[in-house]
Length: 98
Image 1 (cartoon, one colour):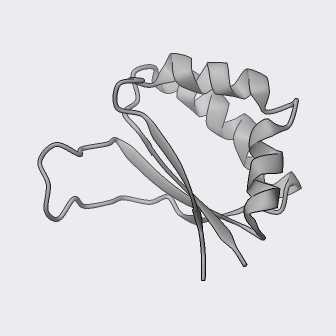
Image 2 (tube, helix red, strand yellow):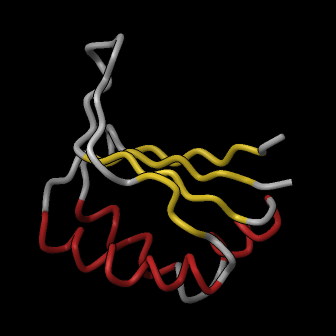
């Protein structure tokens, strides 16, 4: 069954975040993932959740998602992403689909 990665970012360094995005997209694809949504968003019912960016990726299954996240080539990108966002508001959630 598919697995979904839902991420939200409050970006503090746009240049670094752009570098992260340029490097992470081909890596996600390498592990079978694809972007489902990454455009503009609208918060409908809460005032405490106001990310700059929301992205949803789909992977073939949770194993593929975990393999991507733990891949040696992704590890340096974690630090790059964390240096470009407000870590008190950053979020990544893996969800199994039906």
